[in-house]
Structures are given as structure tokens and as C-alpha cells.
Image (cartoon, rainbow, N blue to C red):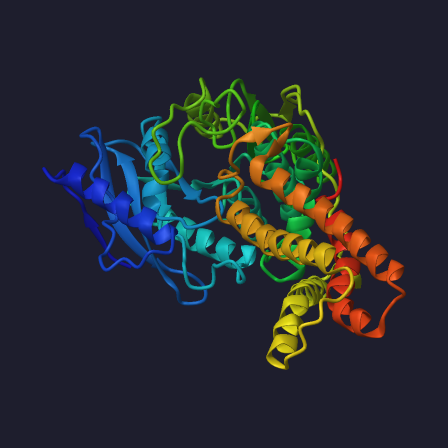
Length: 485
């Protein structure tokens, strides 16, 4: 391990701006050919010291210890554990400095990138990282080693308890916006909330969130989707402070509070405190009207919810005297509840979805392709039902790729780039629904026209691909809510 005390710099502000810009590009997948500065020096009442430590698998992690300046008796320490996604330590700078000003020495560190991705994620591995940070902080001068705990935000609300359950070196656990339900169930609930906040309703808000999450899980794009936090909560014996924003729309606050209370109570945990922040969001900041954060993870600029920082500071300091007895605030109002995410049957599996997409694209494209081949062969006879078949192909070949493109945009933007709302639907979704209805209607018209023209064999061969595609399209569009109000 090595550390080097950082001194205030005249270019600190500029370095911080550059680092945040680089992190933004990296998070968006843009190659970055520079090193992001680890941490800009805080104000003079705090001292920041860079540190390095190794996790159990040998991964070297880099962090910063933030402590009150000057001489002081041994203080409690707290390791801050990131939420989901990329995690440069700068994203927790505000929290680290705010908690340090209450007398808690904090450690923030850059979240691992090796072994943490869309398809590779282990909460146990992240818990090992957090424990390695705890062990480092316990050895620091000016730290009371028996008063070092963990603070976890969002995904960190799963990781921090897991680390604490594995080691008595963790003195206490604080969670913010932790979910008591499994990740897939929480994610579907959050996606639905984002759509409703934007004004979407009907099939889009009702069908899309759970369906896309289940498909991602089945495709292996959602590791730890079925993680059960209850099993870990029932093993916790340390003092626990769990905090939820009254207007959290990412993790279900009322459900999670009830689950925490039940699990910790059944475990016989002698000291847990469940609190609700008035007007707080998922991360402990003041919420916007809809419950979404006024800051973002890259450029935090929001204000903490009233009482949030003082609550954490006073709770940690009070542990030195006596762990508080179990206590819980009344749960906040929660407009909707989460729903279980059952496993995918074979006909909903990613393989079945890909097969359906392949049949539809090939079938709709088969009609113009066979027409082109017939022309090359000099056979220009117009088959019966040609006109409705052309409309069928046009609608189908627009609806299917259009759905692929739009769901891709929704996923990449985390349901923020949904476009304007008309009749409770986004314009792209409304267009996709119109195209879907048109596909079904023209398929029926095509089949009727062929039947009325004495069912010619040549026409049947020509119309078989688009009509087969239409047969697959009907249940597929119903499944995704494209033919539902």
C-alpha cells in the first residue's frame, strides 16, 4: 500500500472539470486517451490522502481518504460503496466531504472495471473490494479501528450488507436507497416509473419494462438479477441504518422498508434504524417533482435532503456510547408495487425471440425478393393480391426494424430519450402500434384476396413468406404490447 498526501492546487478546479468530462466520455463508450485525475483537493478544513489497496483477487484499487484537518482523537471511519454502473471516486466526492465534516473519516475508491460489466458482475467480488477498503481504513492513524463501517448507495445497498455479513471487521452498515427486492424486480419497477413520469401510459408503461428486463436476464445481460438481499439481511448482527427517500422512484421504498424490518427482526438484530427522508430521492438528494434526482452521477450538483448528512453523522457518533434500539419511521407512500420476475419459458427465451425476428424479416423481405427473381427470369405476371401484399411487406418491414431501433434507444438512454407523448404514448410507440395494426390488417386483406382468386398455386408460393411472417408477427406484437391499448 502507498499513500501520498495531496495539497491544494491552483488548477484543482480545472482538473476536476477535465476529469468529469473524461469520465462522461468513458461512460458513453468514447475512447479516452488520458488518465482521469483521482481527486481534486478539498477545502482547507479537510485533508485528502490518496491510497492504494489490493482486493482478495489481487486487483489493485485506488482511493482517497478524506479526514477533518488538524489533531483530533481517534475518529470513526466509513468506506463509501458505489451504486450501479461505472464508479470513479469523484462521483462520491460530495458525500465523502459532507460526512467528513461531521467527524467521520471517509474512504472513497475507484470501482473496479476488471470483472464488472454488463455481462460480468459479482456482488461477492464487490464485497471483497469493500472489505479490503475497510481493512485499510482500520490501519490509518487517527482512526478508531473498532468503529469503521460501510455506507452503500443503491447497488451498494446490496454490497455493503454482504461484506458486513462476511466479516466482523465491519462495525456498522448504512444503506441509502437499498432495495429489499431482487435487482430484476427493482429494475422493472424503476423503468415503469420513468415511463410514467414522462407521461407514458397503457401498454408501453405496462408491458415493456418487465418484458425487456426478463429478456435481458434470459440473455445474460443482467448478472445478479435474482440476487436475494433477504438472505444476507438475516445474517447481519451489526448496527444498521437504512435510509430511503420519500420520493424514491428507483428502489421501492415502502416495500424495501418492510422487508428490511422483517428480515432484521427475524435475525434478532438488536440495533437497526429505518428512516425516511422527506422530499428525498433515491440517493439522499432533494427530489424533483416526479421523484427523480436533480443531480446526476457525473456532475453532482444537487442539494442533500434536509437532515440527511446530520442523520448519518449523529448516528455514527452515537454508536460509541450505545447502539440504538430498533426503530422505524412510518413507510412512505408508494404508488405502485413491484411484481415477481418469473423465469422465461422456452417461447419467451432470447433464442425464440431471435428466431421470430429472423422469420419475420426473412418472410416480409421474401416477397419483393421473389418478385425481383421473377423479373430476372422474364416472368412479369402480376399475382393476385399483389397490392395488399405490397402494403403488408411495407408495414412489416417498417414495424419490426422500427421496434428493434426504438427499444435499443430506450435501453441505451435508460428510458430518458422517449420523445413527446401523444394519447398517453410516445410518438414512436404510437407509430409502431399503427404499423402493427396495419401489418395485421394487410395480412388479412392479402389472404382474402388470394382466396378469392381461386387460390392459385403460383400465387400461394409467392405469398407464403409474407403470410408466414404475419402469422408469427401477430403473437409477437401482442407479447410486446404493440397491439394492445
